[in-house]
Image (tube, rainbow, N blue to C red):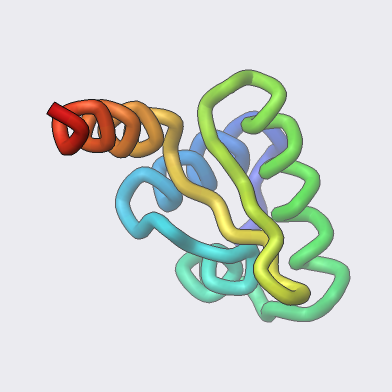
Length: 85
């Protein structure tokens, strides 16, 4: 399926919210796109934009870039604070 940039970014964000933590090749598989280096680079490009918009967090694990929503990070911080008390 062919997406325009904004609709693809929105779809990627929805996938990250539903299936976190997820790496770029996993997003490709969900979108039924062949997970080759070109397509993974396109997904990573949208990861960077979503990260700049403060919608997701990313972390590099080996060669894979993993993403999860910012809301989850907030919940993790709240959980850490509650554990301390």
